[in-house]
Length: 354
Image 1 (cartoon, rainbow, N blue to C red):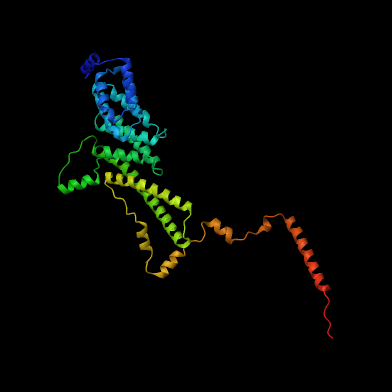
Image 2: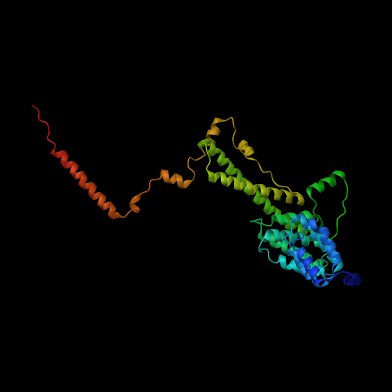
């Protein structure tokens, strides 16, 4: 490899301007310009710029469709430059040490997948240090993200591209195909079985938190939809706030369900049944029973909330809220008026009988 590097240093161009332009291109690399980037890489001597190259790749605003291009370039750079692997690992260590950075969801998604695939392909040669970094990062995500699930897309992407090799877990689809055709699929022996189980355990722990959140959100959505439906039957309309709430819950539910279903399929685990609103209504009451229907309808309140109900039904006792002096004046006036009325009645002459 050293001989090859010396040959590259002699034959490849080392123009400062060309190398700087190439590094700048890496910062915005895409799948569409892969061919041009590969050609430039092969024509340049980047020995003195390899650190800038690594930083440009790791900080590039990549989309998922651009990841294969980035991995291809990393593979070519690893073949030509002996210090590329160590610099890449060092840069990823620095990047993944902070999970609360700006644009953290997108960055962690890219960095986690890049780290996983660099380990699987052997581009990161210090496997012990690399897998330690991967384990530390996954532990931090599992511990801190069980409630918010901000890094769920990153975890799904990681399992999708590295699950079988690092976790030793086959997707539900692949397992069924293997069982159906009774075949054996050779696996890459990157990690020992016990180490694979450690990584798989972390992802399954995270998926359990995802499923629990999904069930809670589903129940909340069904309750909201059921209330809106009953309110519509009783009042003939549903408030804009309730409609907005149901739409927001529905959007959250759809997104979470999609990611949870994908993660469960990749890890070959089962998501519990999530009954629809119609199924819940069928279970709760017999549609042909007027008694049950009336009882169910009575659950719908005429009031939007407890505050509105209290405003119209509970009469406030103002004696404790209004100064007493005002009551004294009103009481004195009332007493004076009552006396005047009484005196008028006494002055009225009584009719005499003839």
